[in-house]
Image 1 (cartoon, rainbow, N blue to C red):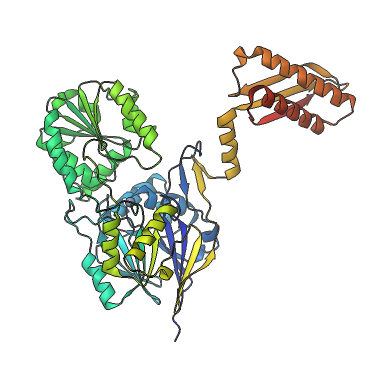
Image 2: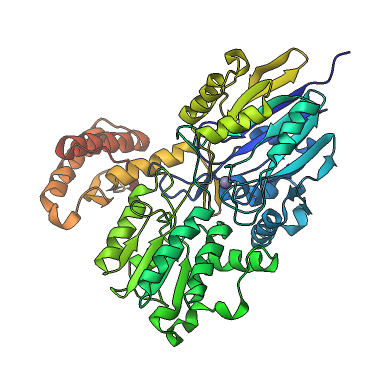
Length: 553
Ligand SMILES: [Zn+2]
């Protein structure tokens, strides 16, 4: 007898770090694993975040039965409010992940469009035709889940983001024994594993090793104020920082919206353990001596409007830093964020602060499995098929090669890309189709910026723009001088001569066009061409140019 097929569509995360989203199809129904955002780089001016595209899902909206969110990071959860604007769909995840999701959904006023289903470690449940089990897995946010799907084509495992931390802060271990048992009981048909650190050799240090460093460092700064920055979702880091600071007699001042929110949510859920009297609000900072203060803030990735950036620019209403302060960056720049992070460190050192970061102290460890961990996981599961997820192409490739090095048959190792659809049937796994999976750019309330608009912004950013206005009289004669306005092309006050020359060229071009009896559209085109040639010759720049001809009576 032939078993029904399973098809998996990769909406994002296979070709970039971010906007992770995988869609599994069984029996005509769809289950999403994650719907995350990606953060823009310098080639995307004005863009807030990038989402997976939903055009393909639009045609299947009736079939979507749920979204399982593996953990609370933005690149897995952050796109959910955008998704809910288009689809009404229930959310599933651990208690913390659902707490963080609920905060986002409430802020976006979309509570009516979803429901929150809390999953506990090891729980097995049915969502439509999907029979699944969620297992605890360690990562850099608490309560991350690994997803196990029991499908007509066998067991499929999706790790989500993970590392193998044998000494986690909360004692919640990756259930490697259960994964081994799956192999023994059923055999695993397909393993999809996190590729982020597939380039890095060895085994990532345990999160608990950061506590060791903090216990050594913090007492050295006994008479100074302490400011620590880390990811607001990294609650085990937050816990360790707070534990050491409190043991040194300091009070904790959360700073930055997501830090304040996440600490509150995690305290409510019992994930973060802070004595009530050891935490205070930033507006009461002035009541404390420097040695009694530990500010814990957002902005460790150099985000422009986050707390640390405001502090570095000495532009924060509640706090001003000086040589009495120690600033600890308990983080590592995500690739692409190095420049803004170093700019912040430079500004802080200029203010006189002592800045400590992971370039010279062990104050950060990754949340992603390195090569030895990936191999350990692979060998525990020994899947029939191996398909790396979550990473740029080079990372996916390295992850695939690692499995091959461990003895996995190359022909059963698949490096897929965004938009690829793979089908598993009785014969095996094959890439069966491809959908368009373009970046979807969000800018404020505009949530579908076209690539063309982005290209215009890039051009404007490089060369500014020029606009020429010409006024024609009732008899079709040129009145006065052409008016040339520009933003960002050149400095008008210092370039009077250049603008005067351009005026003359445009005047001549318009007059000969009028003599030739050209219509308004043609004259506007001639103005643009004349101006473009002049700007190109004089400044070697190609800013966008527009022209308008105004008729008077
Ligand atoms: Zn993550």
